[in-house]
Length: 419
Ligand code: UDX
Image (cartoon, rainbow, N blue to C red; front, side):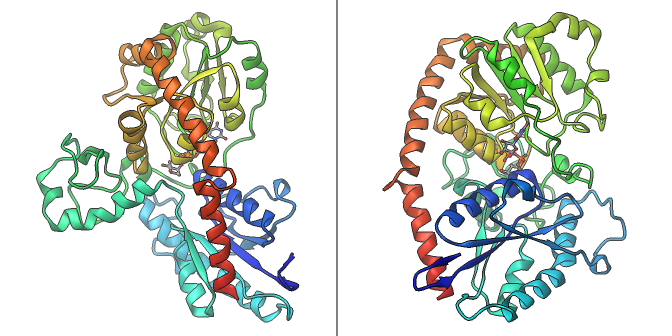
């Protein structure tokens, strides 16, 4: 693609292979492509690849894996840190090789490629430096989460962390409105492992990291039959998992709430079982009947935009948070790990568009939260505030808005770096 004096500008995007990271990287690619950049997606393949058919304008560059540089013998390592480290080690050589070729074979009018890499794909930075290519890091979580991550070493040094337990309700100095329990990094017992995520994320294995199943559009037909703002949509993103007890509490809270519900249960996300059907009792199915719709993967943005959806019970991943806010929907927050707690705190405390479910999942408490959100005065007020936020979010992406301006600055920065 050409711009300014017939010069060609190419961006090589290096996403981290999790849904919540791939989507924002591809969205950024789409925006930058519309501004005249050629887009190449350099992606890993052992966990599933981005769907090239949905992005005919992009070039897809599969990276091969060099398993000999792995730090672990086991491919089924359940340690997220080791997994990320291996992923970087194993794909660095291939990325370097492919970029070297790209640089060598480039035409006269082509600028050097600029690399845009996900925070977790940090080896791309080493490759960029080695080849003297410009590079930009994309962080797919919120700015507040990043600030909280970066504040952690200082809190540690000042002794604040060791004084507080992981459940501390104390506000973190300088990080209002976050409490120590909302901080996204930790293992309070092993504070040296700064980026250590906790049990549920550590339980990641190849299985969890597969790309999600096909979107099930039958739920839209089901939503079409429901009345306005009546349905609670329940989805915990692409990695979180539940045990069977939690599943039963959720199921019965939904049944007892008497509200229509659309519930996403990914295969393998409950006690490793592939089928939700066998986990739900006939008693539950009989009680719920047509009032509930359960799918393996929903077209979430379409669901959140549907007139029938009145609330979203979410794990508060950053994508889900933004998608919900963009549609003016109030939330029930059930964060699992990492940045989700920060997001939940902002949703419930700062923006006041959601209810935080903080304790163990108990059907009576969940039912109360669902009723409060869907039928109560508090829920109505949250919906009004969420509608207000939607308007503000809309203004940000319009010409002259803050996101619009930031993207323009990014384009200028890339051109400056490449030129
Ligand atoms: C992960 C981390 O959990 C999150 O904390 C971090 O902010 C990003 O990476 P994930 O669990 O995938 O994210 O959640 P989220 O960020 O909300 O992304 C999930 C994406 O999958 C959303 O874009 C959502 O629209 C999509 N999705 C989810 C569907 O399209 N259908 C579904 O059924 C469920």
